[in-house]
Amino acid sequence: MCQSGYGDAYSFVLPSNLKRHAAQDFPEIIPFSKVLNAPGTLTFSHPAVEPWNPAFEEIIAARQPWSVSAQSGLAGTFMAATRFQSVWEDLTLAGALRHEWQHSYTTASDERIQTGLKRDSEYLIARSSPDKKTLLQGVVIRDGITDAKAPHYSLDAPSLERLYLALQGEAIPLDGPFNRLDLKASWSDTEVDADNHSLRAPINTKIAVEGDIRALMLASRLTSPEGSWIALEGRWDRYDADRFAREYGPNQISAIRMPDAHAEQVAIEAGHGWHLTRARIEAAIRADLRQTDIEQADIRPNVPGVARAIYNITPRELYRKYYGFTGDTDQSAHEIGARARLEYDLAPENMVFFDLRRTIRLPELPELYYANTGTSALAQIGNPELEAEKHHKVEIGVKQLRHGFTRYGRGGTPGSSRVEVSGFADHIQDFIILDHARGQSGTIANDGSLIYRNADAVLSGMTAEMHYNALEWLALRVHLIGQHGRDLTDRRPLYQVAPVEANLFVDLFGSETPWNSGVHLRWVGAKRDTDSQAATGTGQDRNGPRGSFVTTDLYGGYQPSRNLGFSMEIANLFNRSYQEFIAEAPQTPTTTHPEAPGRTVLLRLIASF
Image 1: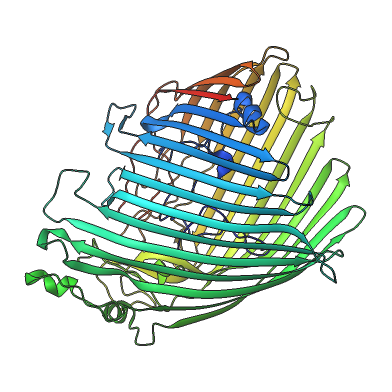
Image 2: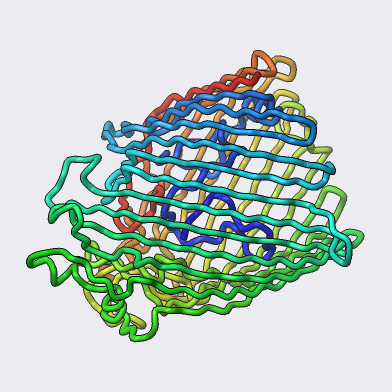
């Protein structure tokens, strides 16, 4: 389904980041708040946390009428952006323009990676707060990506156009048992044109895809003074795409890639919050109902000649061939989720939390209805009989502030610290796996094509972060994250689970003169437990088992005035050769791994007026 970059509106049960495992159809829309400093779309190096950059943080937070920024980045990325706003009494008009250009880059081993894109994004936002509490807002975003080449990717994107519209009303006062109303409506439209010949040297088999993805969302939430709420949500999604065989002519369809699939979904959530002397408790239950279907179940591709036998198969025939599916493509889903969270203050600056939830992830339209025909290297077949994922997750954490911690770095109290630690375990019933057809349970084909099926899995992990203001001119930050996943049904590792990663930042800064400098040490642990064999597993860990690596970055910044800031970073100082474990977006079965960039100098400038 369409990923708009703006998460679920008002649900407490359903987290906005619950997405298809290790998959992303398109890069996210960059939020308006990050227009000036967001990294490039394709970086091929992505630490879990970024260095402290106080000049950018302060100037962006100041929200002057005009702000401009420019930066060079990893993987040959250059970006320029401007943000503006004007205020008239209770009305604010804001907008932004952002241009990104990314081209080929060189690795530490002197390999030239052929990649690149151009990305232009425009934002227009109108806000009104007539009574200083209520917020009325309208958002228009156009995001255009052209000439997008991902390395070793079978389909580049000469054009990807997205339009996002939203209307929102927050904290609207009401009379009665519910005294607050929140409303949101959004519309997104994505048009993609992808092929394997426009941006690279043509090959014999010229494949192209044209698709249109649309989504309409309506959401509301009623809140009472006692802490109760009721949230309602409705969605309509449509995904239509064809794959063309251009070597046979401009209009020869080789697959009904997404056979005009659509979904209608409604959800209702009811919850309550309790605020006690030292504790806060929230609990809610959510019901989701969804109907999906396709309009082109019996449309046949039209490839001529001897290739007809492997290409000219209807979506319904594909589902029957791979799963024995003989039912109606009109599918229904009815699922219940729930969540409870307790936060308890052990001391004024010491809090522990316990979070328990049952979260539902309904199958996305591609997982249900993909209909890519062809050889096993091309075929990718959705499964209309997929069950929804049921996540049973428990999370425990603690947050501690000591000696009057208020902020990190300049302006923070010397000797103060902040520590946050959390861990989770998630047992996933009917986890949706992208696998190869080998006649396993629920599959009758045995030709190695990519298919979707359900299995049980477990995913666990932990995160720890410590901020410490050692002296008036010295601060330290440590971030540790790790996950472990297991496919319980097939008794093998869960694919595309990142290895353990630790980041250490040592920051120096002036208390009077606004300068800063620092060093970033990053360690990524070895990844031995992988699902990298397509003959016996999913093969989704395409780069296989890997050893650990360490990188070192140096960075610094200077703010000569309150409206002007510079920063510089030398990334991968010692020119280490390494590959990130998780594949870059777009994550598809045909993506393979390039090395990360070698030693790179990054420059940033920001100014406001």
